Length: 264
Length: 269
Ligand SMILES: Nc1ncnc2c1ncn2[C@@H]1O[C@H](COP(=O)(O)OP(=O)(O)OP(=O)(O)O)[C@@H](O)[C@H]1O
Ligand SMILES: [Mg+2]
Image 1: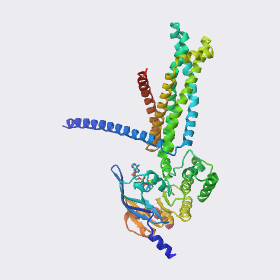
Image 2: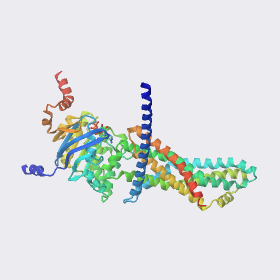
Image 3: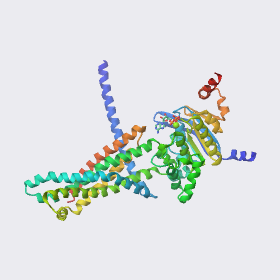
């Protein structure tokens, strides 16, 4: 057991970001972000709306180009890759969008089939169908297979969006607010799904969230993004024992409500 | 004092706004240029999205067939009916089939088909790609290692470029059928003699010119729709804007092209 941990410690990080900067016009969104993720690790990124959390993972997946700084994913510098190399790398990165981004014109089955048949042309029909069914079972929605995205609820859409990225068996998962706008029970289900994905698919993940319960339950580490920088990276307890005002506000917003109602 | 200082301020501001809009016009033009260059680059690189191209061709044909049939037929009939009095005045009613078919094949069929397709296909492409863009479906395609430009844009532009000549030929034939029915009802001309006198005056060059125009219009409609949709911004509002601009641009460009092509090809006589 100890040996395994040491091996993990010695490994090169799957994602390594150094002094990352990005601005849009005069708006400085990211202003020197540094962090690393090791294999199998889940990190939660917290931060207020508009602080650039989505921008951060879009840079990691190569959807946006950084202005400066190092962005290394699985040992490759994302912004220096040509289109072919980027496509190969992207097969190993799963991206679950904030608004699910399911293809409206396709049914759930076709949504899941799309990335699979286009990237794994060697599979026959049966293997494709098996893969679709197994990934739908993993997210707990086998009954939706023939529905259209417009017929799904928000939480179902999120889970199908996750399924669509899992079908390529990624090594890294990027979740953009997986639990936002969902009821507490669905949130718990999604948290469990994220943990299940981490264990079964052996992924390393970045989970963007406003939801501290989600961060606490799903992540090994927590980072707080304030004014374009990671204010603090560490375990949940480490980060939230800090006295920094920004972090306290975050904590209070999420948990004081509960304590108040308990006191009553 | 205040008023004198205000005036130069407002003129500099006006000048600034004008120069800014000129700048942005050239920026847009350059962006459009790179978009078209990218289209040509990616249409010649493997793998070709045959299945999607065929799907789009089918969709374009299916969407426009009824509309171009009706409008083509009506145009043929009405144009024949309205040309008759002026020709009869010169005792030249027997020229009606040739006059009408030249007008239909050379100008009306290409223009009508292109305008209908701009309204129907162009707006559809603009809205479809626009909504995919603003709801991040295009980004989703990109991160799942599919080239969205090739899958969505190239296939649509190729399909509309390929389908337009087919539709123009079809509209031309339907229009001539409309013309024939009107001639038949009034002059009791037989089907065969109508088409013999019609095709006596139509040269191969005329048909070729129409097909060439159709290809240009089809390309224009595809590019306008895809460019506007693919670059849509600002949420659902941007989707409507994209669809609208796709139609406006393509209709305007179609007329400009009509003028240019006719001018250029007339020189080759
Ligand atoms: N493509 C873009 N062009 C211009 N500005 C952008 C672009 N993408 C993001 N921004 C700006 O960057 C800032 C950060 O955006 P981002 O979407 O990363 O926020 P976020 O932290 O994910 O917020 P939320 O929690 O609301 O999703 C915002 O102010 C936004 O206006
Ligand atoms: Mg976001």
